[in-house]
Length: 87
Image 1 (spheres, rainbow, N blue to C red):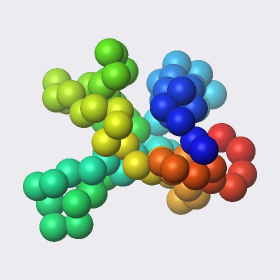
Image 2 (cartoon, one colour; image 1 turned 90 degrees about the vertical axis):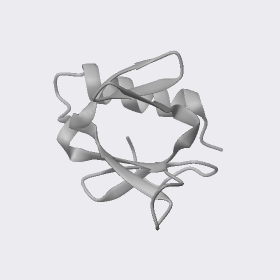
Image 3 (cartoon, one colour; image 1 turned 90 degrees about the horizontal axis):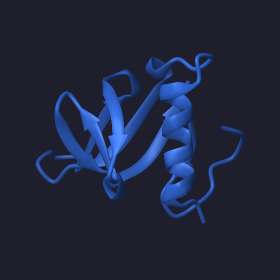
């Protein structure tokens, strides 16, 4: 089962590996205020990760609300299961 440590690893790689381009990533976050109940957050909107939260334009999004990560149109992480392919 894919866990939070794997999610943190993906986020850290996206933010700090100079070979990565954050704009290639999309994070799907539970958002009860939308009709679809999911909100898309582009990787280049994420400022940093701290204390279990994504910092996005000054707002904090709890990591437990992230349910899927997509890079270049492919699911690379999904809560509760391992996605096919590499990170």
